Length: 293
Image (tube, rainbow, N blue to C red; front, top):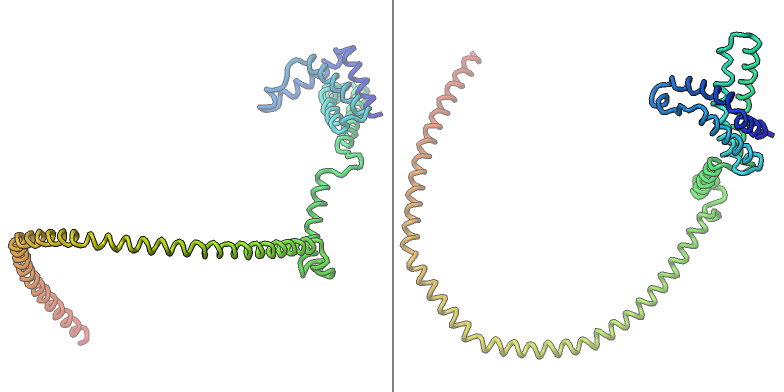
């Protein structure tokens, strides 16, 4: 019933496009006065817009009448009313009182149609909307958490009786069974590893004994060679030390002389600073005595 008026309007606009084109042209002229970017991006061909609007009204009316995509069809029909209503029933521009009243009634009728289409667009046909489903799911989660807490609103049922507690208990039971299974596996593998270690221990001890004898024999053979190298390097190092001894002694003597000179200079500076400090102390003492007097 709601779609009948739009189907008839669309067919009439396609059969006689001039009135719909004139109404659409007036609407586009009014909307073009809006500030950018709305005003400059509006279409300028009123005839094309009128034909598209008529096609939308026929298609949307058929979908709404057949119950196909009713919410989408209702929203499209509501938008299609705007071009024809604003331009075709601009009662505020009429001078004749009778014509002004007729256009006002037609305008109010279109507004009522838009209201009905909005109701149809938001109608969920008895099915819960996404917003209601989200709020209901959040409320369920909140109630479950509150009932699981000892101080919650449903604490009287106790934590043990809550679904969350059942899930937690089931998880703990599964974890305990898994722990016992892993402990059994660890015990079996531990015995296996101990047996392997026992078998490998004898082999490793035998290898270590054989390698120990071999290394001891090698060390015994290399000992005279290493001793000869140490003796040669010792004589070389001793000779180098004998050659460097006078040079190092001279350097030590120069450093000692420099230290003595620096000590004398520092002592002189310290003496001067001490005298200066003594004079300043005497001046401060005199000033203090003067203030006391």
